Image: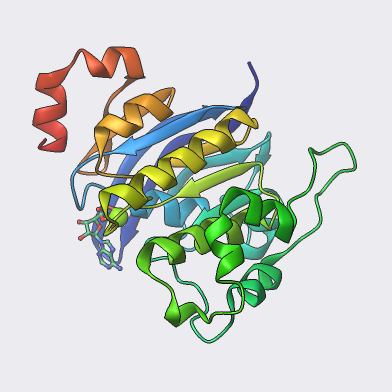
Length: 238
Ligand SMILES: Nc1ncnc2c1ncn2[C@@H]1O[C@H](COP(=O)(O)OP(=O)(O)O)[C@@H](O)[C@H]1O
Ligand SMILES: [Mg+2]
């Protein structure tokens, strides 16, 4: 079991508003991990710290043994962290194909798994191939999310981070997204997934970290969380 990402004692604030109070979690290679919690509990703030979009006040973030908490965003991306941001943030005036090509980056090492290509992304999301000449703004929410995932994959990440993976999508499209994440997991891609739908997360993920007001208040495996309906209700409100 290799540790891919290690977060220790991470604290962060927006001005004087403290958002994270020393959180710890880790991701093993090949694992899918979730950050769970109701709105405003610190999940996106954690993501911002991972990607260098918010400087932590304290703590340590290591990716494959390398400290990244002081590195600039482009360097963090180059080191293998791929982001599917909240709200998708695709280029609305570029075509699907241009969006994908815009973020393409060669794998870091020759020994890395087969690199992501347009064809491979289209294999995962055939809908994107049909829409490849359409501009971002012409896509449905589900297609935009597929594009956001495809774009992150084109950077050849070793760890994919999805903030609100299926927010605002219809049940059918949500299921397509869950299926695609499950296929990526089968291919060995490590993931951190944030989403409000606990049931599909129990199926997809290996371990969970529950955040409450900027602290990790529970962590454990899917089998353990599935037995904790009281805890799920208390911390996730479902
Ligand atoms: N840009 C910001 N400026 C000030 N406070 C923020 C900002 N973003 C988030 N917060 C606050 O930080 C806390 C954690 O928010 P966030 O990490 O976005 O929660 P989550 O993603 O779990 O819903 C909340 O109290 C939220 O109001
Ligand atoms: Mg959020």
